Image 1 (cartoon, rainbow, N blue to C red):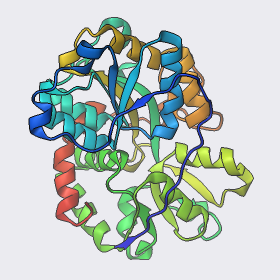
Image 2 (image 1 turned 60 degrees about the vertical axis):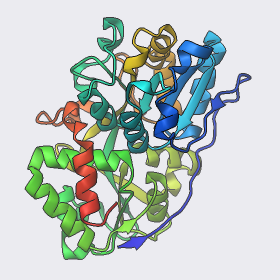
Image 3 (image 1 turned 180 degrees about the vertical axis):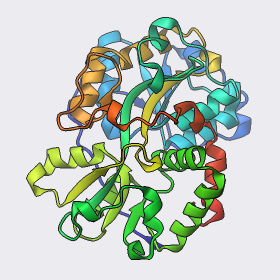
Length: 351
């Protein structure tokens, strides 16, 4: 496999007076975390573990602080890393809220009862297809998996309509993706659930043998396509829309293929849950209500180009409807077997 590492930043769209306190991103040792009481109960600061890019959500967190006066401390990392850390810290975690890039990382915590049940006004605000069936985490935004393709090299008619086609010899060395990314791992989990473990493992094995271009992030992968260095990329849809907003849609060499009904085209969600040790925490509940408020949902529409999940909020212009992309056989709760997917990817050298 080939490696391509490119950094890409998203500009912060609003500057607000009240800053968000940042926690170090390094992991906490067991002997430190076991003696740590919940931060919200000791110093009045709402502690959030955030698996989302800081540049994307820091303005929104600052807006929450400005509107409520509630101070926030944020620990940033990838959703798989933070989910693993929370599993290690257990009920002694200093975190009050986990804000995840995908449903799988939340499901892994739900599976071992590390999330608290949410009140009805939160759990019922988002349609059932995009939130926890156990009411212990709530969906915030939707993101569709897509294939980005180099429109100067490949016609749309020749772009695969299923990820299962990408292991063919003709795509050797021409497909890129970030296997450490939560959304990619959730896609592979969906492939396991929809097609079976045997089919999923064969795909991972064949894909690893097909000289994929391995990247660190979705945005970097899209950049390779847009600059003519890569033919196909497996990413989330909104990265293209963010780039188009910056560069102009007419300047986008990369174009998108949506994959309705295919495991490679699942609609995943960002979501948030309150840790079990912070059950009933008023500030944490206020934060989740803020995330699903019309104002926050509009923020995600206009600044990150994700699907809003609160009914009545219009999606970004040009996106296919969520209903047209949904797979009736797939449930987001099925993404909770994240660790099995990570072992599968590691087994075949993709992690």
